[in-house]
Image (tube, rainbow, N blue to C red; front, side, top):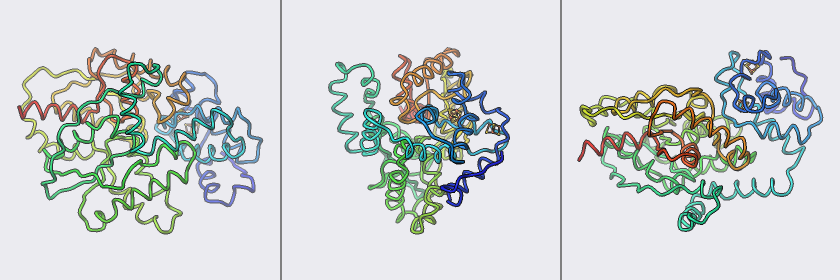
Length: 414
Ligand code: SF4
Ligand code: SF4
C-alpha cells in the first residue's frame, strides 16, 4: 500500500512504524472474512481492511470524526486478522497508533469519558478491585444482572505449596484475577510443584498494563510495566528464576510486548527485553514437563471427561500458542471436543464487554453455542476475562484448564 503520511506524524517513531505496517498491506481482504465484528455488522469499515484504510487516511491528514472513532472502538483487538493475513501486517500496533490519534482529535464526552476513566483508575488497582469484589459478592443476589455478571462466585484457592524446589519461577498475580479467581494461580503453583518447579509471586507486581494500554492510556500501561519490572528485577538479576509465568493469556500477551512498549525508554529498554524473553504462558511451561507430569498423574483409568476448550484470542492470535492446551488436557484424562469457529472471539476482550455490551453479548452467545455442540458439560479457557464473561452466559461450569489438571492431581493424591 502506497503511503504519504502527513507532517504531524511522518518523522516520529509512531509514524515510521505505521508507515512500515501500512506498506505491507496489499488490500487482499482475506482478513475481513475472519473478523468477528465484520461478520456481525457486515460493514467493511467494521473489519480490519476498512479500519486500516481509516487509520491510513487519518495519518495522511484526512478529517477525523466520531464515526471514525466508533469503527475503531468496535474493534475487539482480537488479532484474528493478524493470524489470517498472508503479508504479516501487524494490525494491532497500527490500531494502537490510530486510536491514540483519534482520541486526541475527537475527545470523548460525558458518560463515555467517565466510564473509561473509572475503568482505567479502578480495574488495575488490585487492592481496590479486591475490596469491591468482596462487597459485590456479599450483595450479589440483589445486584442487577449486568453487574452480577461481573461478580463470579468465589472458588476456594486451596493451599499454595511452600517453595521447596531449586527450580523457581515467578507468577504474575495481576489485578482482577486474584479477586475473581484466586484458585487459578494456586492451581498453577500446585501443578508446577508436582513437576519440580516452585512458583512464587513477587510483592510489588500488579496489573500487567493491558487495561490502561487498551483504554488508550499508553503511559499508564508503561507505568504498570515499569513497576512490574522493578518488582521482578532483583530475582532476575541474581539468576534466581527461570521464567515469568502467565496464567492469563491476556497478561502474557502484554508482558511479552514490554520490549516494544519500553523500547524508547533509555532506563528500562534493556530490562524490558529481558522480561519479555523470560515470559511464558503456563501452557508452555507445563508442555515442557510432560514426562514429570505424566509420572505425577499416573495412568488414568476412568472414562475421559469431555471438555470444550475456548482458546482465548490472546493465546492463539497474540501468543500464537495453538493446540498445546488440548494436548495437556488429553494427557490428564480429558477429551477436548471439536469447537466450530474456534478462531473467533468470545466477546470478552478486556473491557470490551462493558464498553460494547451488545456486540459482546452476541459474540458470547455464538461462542457458547459452538462450545456446546460437542456435548461437553465443562468448558475450559486460559484467560480470566474470557472465563468470567463465558460463565455469566451459561450454567455450564467454566474453569481455567490448569485447574482441571490440578483437579486430576488432587484425585490421584486421594
Ligand atoms: S482485531 Fe479482531 S475485531 Fe479488530 S479488525 Fe482484527 S479481526 Fe476484526
Ligand atoms: S489480509 Fe493482510 S494484506 Fe490483506 S487486506 Fe488484510 S491486512 Fe491487508
